Length: 196
Image (cartoon, rainbow, N blue to C red):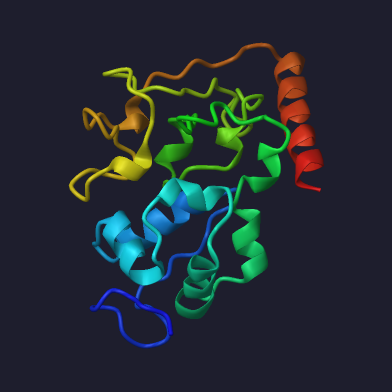
């Protein structure tokens, strides 16, 4: 029997946001907890026995998959697509020890801010949508981005250390014309190859 936070009863949870394109699984489960106005770590510990949220990106435990399928309505195949497990064997993550993630300040300004799988990849350096360099540190305190450490008082787009809104981080636009398009095309092609 699946355990869940005491305020969540019934089969389908009251709030179950849809996963976004290229969303990282840890980003998604944190958004679910935050949508229920709950601290992510205790929420998922009670719901699925998961206490280390970033580890779900590598290999989500069966208990988490069951909760997402039964109470959020997500297909197990979609859950697997949100992991970075397939990228690990190639050694292509930015930093496997500290789980460094990059971000695009412009992308975080979207209606539904979330963190992308591609932002974990070392070779993914340019935002394909905005043509800007991805950032890996806070624009104010220069801390690494650790969205799993945010308190509920901070927006999902804030720096966990100083609270700076990452959407306001300076962006560096590339003005390389065809060369920029080539870089973006190579990033996307390589990402697709790794996914197959």
